[in-house]
Image 1 (cartoon, rainbow, N blue to C red):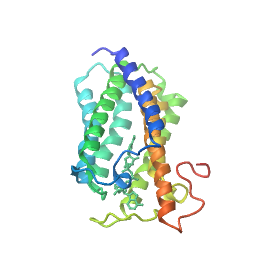
Image 2: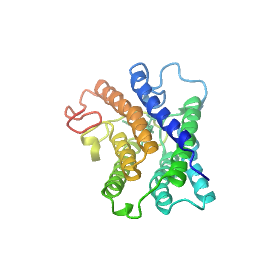
Image 3: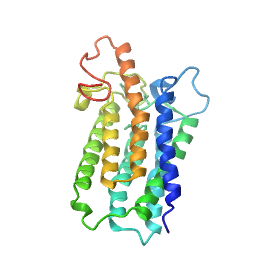
Amino acid sequence: MHCHEDLVCCLSCGMILSALGYLIHHKMAQTSYGRHMGLPLPKRMVPAAVAWFLQEMPAVLVPLLMLLTSNKASSMGRNLLLGTFCVHYFQRTFVFSLRSRGRPFPLGVMVAAAFFCSLNGSLQGHYLLHCAHFDDDWSADCRYITGLSLFYVGMGINIHSDYILRNLRQQGEVAYRIPTGGLFEYVSGANYLGEIVEWFGFAVATWSLPALAFALFSLSFIGPRAFYHHRFYQEKFKDYPKLRKALIPFVF
Ligand SMILES: NC(=O)c1ccc[n+]([C@@H]2O[C@H](COP(=O)([O-])OP(=O)(O)OC[C@H]3O[C@@H](n4cnc5c(N)ncnc54)[C@H](OP(=O)(O)O)[C@@H]3O)[C@@H](O)[C@H]2O)c1
């Protein structure tokens, strides 16, 4: 398949504009799931494990299908897609989702997230398999090495932090407790910090516009969410650690 350059550029710029739009909009409302669901609750709800499984799965399935059906892709593009994007979404779909102890999830948000994951999976997959050109010595390039290191450090932080959150509850509980340990000692949104580091690492390792667009989208979606989680904790728990920040240790 040849590269649809115009479409890639259009979708990437659209994602960057949506990120900006979301940043402006976030003061009015957070995407309505988890603790930020307003009352009355949406009528159609799905168990959290089912919702996360179904909505995240397209982001691993679509690139994998593209990989299996494209024989002309560069091996670096294939390796990057498999070793970063697919690994992340495999973990999110088959480990994080199925172990979730979150409260039921609104059906509408799940459908929107599944649409986004399909679109983003197609965009990142198409770009890395059919558009990206990597020099033969890209694996020795400092952008590749730094980007991959950031990606895996971020992924480690994200998985460890989600593990801490999951263990704050027994199955069936919906109460919120103060998270402790790992980067939660420094920030309220440790899982979000890990995820943001991950996607900026992916953008550096692939040195691509679609990956940068996704990193910016993630920052604008979960960055404000970390801020509102932080405010929620401060209001709910009088003994919430005073020095803990929202997203960036010691800074914000
Ligand atoms: N790349 C992106 O744009 C993007 C967007 C969204 C999410 N994500 C990733 O998806 C994962 C989940 O996101 P999320 O927004 O659901 O994260 P979250 O609000 O931190 O919640 C994660 C899970 O832990 C539970 N939880 C959170 N804080 C808790 C506490 N203090 N006490 C007890 N349980 C607690 C939540 O339950 P409740 O559901 O009941 O609150 C939920 O099941 C994260 O790793 C995030 O980085 C990525």
